[in-house]
Image (cartoon, rainbow, N blue to C red):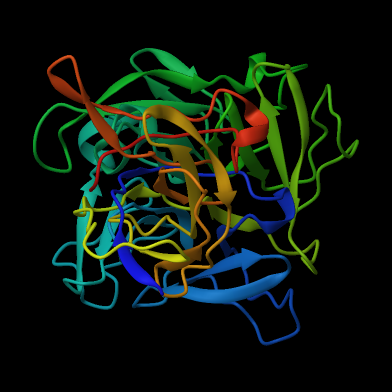
Length: 385
């Protein structure tokens, strides 16, 4: 006899499914047909997974997208445009290349997120924002904005190269309330140094002190565990711990004439809402776990963990993939009393295992101590947007 068991599920984070299963969100500088299914246009964003491309976003007014970031809040994106545009009348004021815009799909609205003219300075008036992401460790959707520029740009008396990533921290409300707070990725200090002529046009951060990077020209990145020259359509990774570059992903069928003009990883997995545990009528036999979808659009699937009641934090992986089909999972429980945790994951890392009350406050439950007992080694914890 099967009974419904509503589980407690919480904070999500990204998980490392096989590297070939990762999803990247990309835009291109010219009409491009990597999959032979029709041209992808410069004002579109497509999800790329295992050589497949699925349209995710079409920006009105048909401006070329210069940078993109998929936010945690469902249906929300950040992006910049290559040339001045009011997005076909969807903005009251014209956006410039140094601005970052936000699209809220549920609200059907476009707005200014980062007003470059207010925070970059007059010497950056010809600067375009070429790569963006929000830093999860400083707050996910409310985190610091990480930016690269298309030309050498002077900020606070220092010139930053087109392959550098710099940090802006919000110090108030509004798109002009951002304050420069230092360099994040110093291209000249990465390995043998990235050439000043190599423009970083797409970037994101991945767990373990690493960044994924795409450039506007074939780039020799040393020392490298990957190709001697990284070509358009090849996503490089800089591992700051190992001090090396390697190949993160190859976009299937990508032509040399086209640049990956914008790049983003999945959003963070977020949290699964707190649910009550229904113990009524439980009998020996299979159980069906049920839960609500994570509050973040980053969750690609859910992992199921099992532990012994009375030996809390003894949980180990039971099933690492539910395919987000119907947010239910049938399990055959242990012969002894067991508890179950549902963890939202992506192809990068795991999320929260839920929280427990300790020392007067709620604390996130830990991952299993042994890496072999986890679905994915890395974990990222963020609040709901």
